[in-house]
Amino acid sequence: MITQLEKITGERDEFRDAHETISIERDDLQARVTAPDAQAARIAELESAIRDRRHYDKFAELAKGAKAKDAALKHLWQVSGYKAEADEPDEKALGKLVEDLRKSADYAFEPSDNADFGMRNAESKIQNRQSSRTKYGLETGAAPEPAGGGRSTERNKGGDGTIVTAEMRADPRFMLDPRNREIITAAAKEGRFR
Image 1 (tube, rainbow, N blue to C red):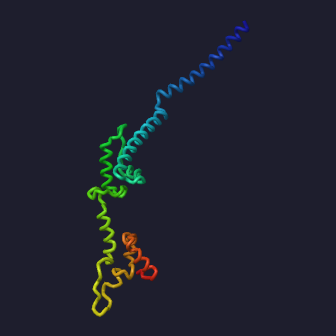
Image 2 (image 1 turned 60 degrees about the vertical axis):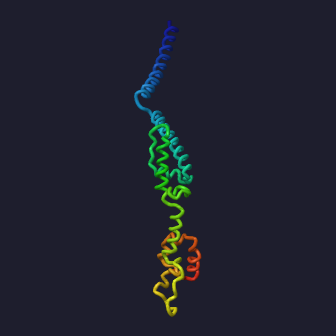
Image 3 (image 1 turned 30 degrees about the vertical axis):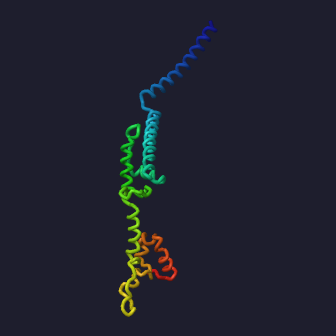
């Protein structure tokens, strides 16, 4: 009888331990079912990242086709403000977005052979470059010498290339124009900055 009592007591202890383990597992499973957990949030986050990546990859493909600079792709994507809503990218919407960016952010694209496409084309760049020199009278042609060889009222304003004024030095177009390099170098060596 004592052995039976010991046996029953041992079984009771085993059942009590098993009941505690099962109760803990039940509470854990019940918490997972009733409350949204971190795993569901993580899954939604990863699905969103995959969707964004698909849309970005399609955007990058279309932008490269429109001669976008590789280094500017992420910048263009951020500037566009595009938000991926569907799982699959909308090629038409992304194509229109790239077209609009080509017009508004033309600095991020390689120059196009088509002069009508984009705001800056080769002609406007040449005109800008010419204006940096003509603005200060460096390409106005030979000015007639005043009678008697005296000083003219236009002399030493920088137009004749003898000095480089503060206004000229403050103008990035003038300073960065390779055609002005000799004038700037000579003026610096000879102390003709005003």
